[in-house]
Length: 314
Image (cartoon, rainbow, N blue to C red; front, side, top):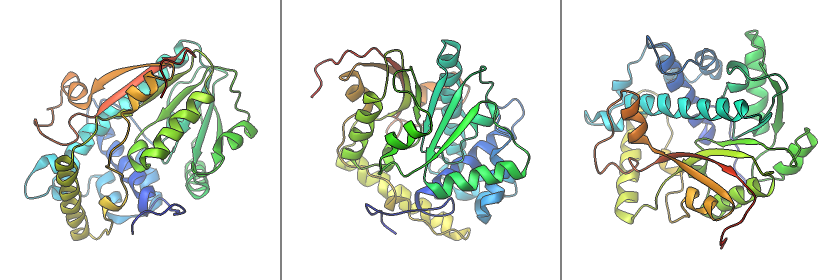
């Protein structure tokens, strides 16, 4: 079902299902000897959601290659697992470095099945705010409590849709905009229309004290050929998922039209964003890069600090 301005979801449907798929990928990485990252909560969370194909992937009962399209591993789950390994490490390292620098206020936007509040070694006094839809927050909180998991920071769940007044909800939970904050918007921007992306980045900027940090993804604008190719691949991938009993058209979930490149947009608003392409991170961590010409090979994972000086904002 196509997205609407007032759509909702749980972790088995629509945008929520992508959080479960990403958690399944983290579980798959975690099972690898000498894995780049470790998320012991990913598999039990995926099991709790109860989508069969995700559970079989997370537990190793289904090989990721079963979801390759026409034998092309670059369109399958295996390369997504590689991407999730380097992406997860990028954001883990971002928070570790931000708190080592003294930041004690963290906000994870669209937190989904993110378990960082429970698995990262947060310094004493760190407050981690998780923002997501109420059903998602309630589910994860209950599922982790049922397996005896306890957060390693002062975790404060902010149950609100990002299309509503989440800054006010964040403040009511104790957020202080006068203190530096480490923000993450991981795997989020592509699920927002262009104007909503800019609005979110503007709101983060307005809530950030000097010394704050932000990590997110940044992609150059796609031309129409790239968009058409990406849509075709997502539709082919959706057919493979249907063959394994799960119905979800990924093309209904994302917005691939013209938009501002996030890193450049933020740099014009007082941030100093820099980062690496996904291929650079894959290669640096011993994974093969995506082939030249892949529509998403130009994706960059970026982070940076805020000094409060707006530079030629438009």
